[in-house]
Length: 150
Image 1 (cartoon, rainbow, N blue to C red):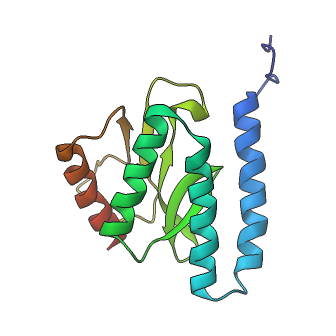
Image 2: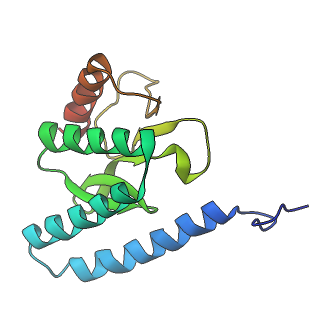
């Protein structure tokens, strides 16, 4: 039986994410006709808006990741992905930040999509649990972002 705020198949948070994705697809179609700088500026405004909605560790981690991606892969375009901060190229998401509060879980996630260049043998990680970001963590993720975006 579904709990309050859920259907038999999706939680309220999942339905919200699907609505955000549908809206993002409509926005992407309209942006296809715009110049790259306008696309970047509008995408960054959306991403920063999502970060501003966060609080506590989620906001701190999200802002640190935005700075990290911007510094290490400046050619990636800020955007949103299922209502979450993300960065992409060629109209596709390369990496994203899923705040812990998004789905009411115990840790945030920084993940990479299939266009990323992270292949290393037969098995490689594509997402990472994040509770805090120290200097070693930032250096590790910066290297992954550079490699993924190459």
